[in-house]
Length: 419
Image (cartoon, rainbow, N blue to C red; front, top):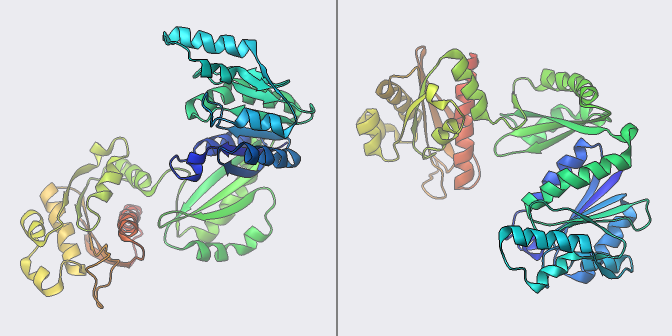
């Protein structure tokens, strides 16, 4: 089965609302083994919606439309769908009764325009909405294909998907036709997307099922391995040999899976080794501490942190020798080392981690350009510092510096830090 999604709402085109509905529905369709080739956004224009529905209906077996089912004059999805198939609009008594019942339960007077939500394209079926007043709509113009209309409010859309749409799709597919599209994401740090892709180009060129897709994040690269199979177990069996091949090729850069960011991996290592850490941050402004303390159980390994932005703070809180600041400057190998050692001593932790740099957009020089960052690491075996040169705006430099510092800590915990 091939599906297509249409997201309705001028607010989506203006960027006033972030479209989370299409991502959710794409996931649900993938789990059912349904291919999705197009996701389109369109404003609240009856003619454009109708034209897009006609186009999608030619390409797909299942068209799902989200948004435009409210009671106001700019909610035009049902009327546009009716236009697309040359249908009139009819009052659905069951839908009207459900809307009236919901208003009664809420003890709110129902306005006349809410009756609009009970009108459906001729021959359509109302799908119950347990979370709101606008029913979903199922239309099968020729019994071979289907058009489903859902409210744009995410909680309502998800409720109707779970209770009505997914069961309907499964029934249409039949037990033999139900399969899944299953993905596993591998995360890499330390090389760019183009370099990573060139290193595995030969593997990508022969892919079929599963497929491999690289995509860049903020300072890292991910590989999504996707398999289509009758069950999750079969999909996993297809994915695992490919995963082993990729990790064997890219193992030096591989650090984790799925939604687990670098901070989660570092947290797991700290907990498993019973190690504690303290942070001294300058240019990152507490971002690394924020990331580490977002992980549940962080009080077991994160003791304390200091945002020592000024030279005075570096001296008074971390005990950085003023002569180092004068001779080498705050953004230097020497000061990064002193900050890491100082915060470790101050907190009494196993590890001290520091960051000092120039986030920009100003403050750079020819010798010390914007994006220059030093990461310091202090531990029982010694003190090291690592130099990085990042590109990007201020927020990007801060994010990339935080990720680099966490990766240095990760490699230290694994016993594999290299210059």
